[in-house]
Length: 66
Image 1 (cartoon, rainbow, N blue to C red):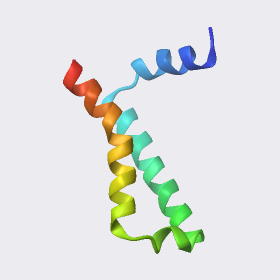
Image 2 (cartoon, helix red, strand yellow):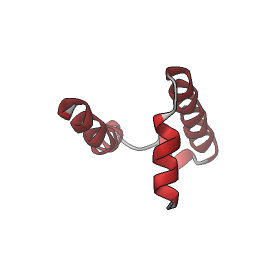
Image 3 (cartoon, one colour):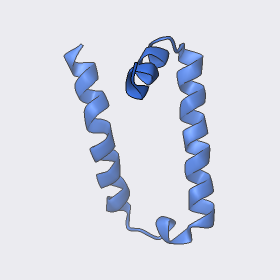
Image 4 (tube, helix red, strand yellow):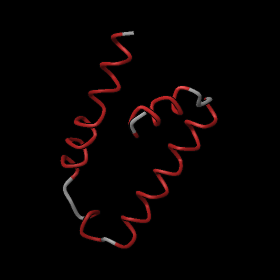
């Protein structure tokens, strides 16, 4: 079993609380990066919008497909 197959297997067993905890951990990690890498927070607003759109496409397609 490859590493990605193992991650996918484990991810299917997540509950809503597990997913929410993972999301909050990633948000906290993003805040840590923003705290210590100041140039990230000085970008124009549209760069954040572009990154958001790029990363939300796949989950949205998965939700629409199912």
